Length: 228
Image (tube, rainbow, N blue to C red; front, side):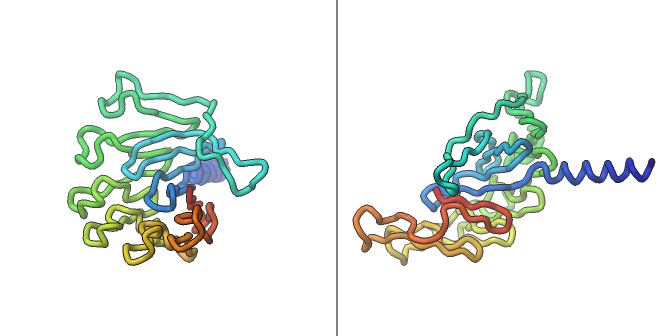
């Protein structure tokens, strides 16, 4: 009986740990990061800014005609959503407290300036942030989501790249620079082993700046990178 209870508890912890995970990273126009998305139970996506704010949540809808197209706007989640009430810490008051079974907490007023009021946990995932001791271009941005590290281009890098997402875990992200065609500058060049090419100013009118090769949705290291 004791062994059964232990096994059941272990299974619960495994399921809990897998209940929330970084699922998507979205770049509008293939340039600067727009938001990070966590996948929770009931297929609910929670979209977050790179500085630890909840932007929206809901269900992603796939096109019936195109398997690789999903509507950018999430469909509303009709399950239970709770908010922190007037009895809560002043920095948490009014913020979303839970979405389905995913409980959300925030760093309190006693924390360092870069953390106050920002996401602390979603379910079992713990968030941490770059602080005042880090490069100024990184301060206040998410540093860890669980055991996944997020890195950004610093103020010592090319000024056109400063603050942009540089890597998620071991997956590096590179961008076209000022030395490339003007229509390419700032657009994603590669994500991990996957390269992206774009139509240039020399291409046919109306195509310039559009994605030429590389999928709009690409799964790399169990995370879907989306070019919108």
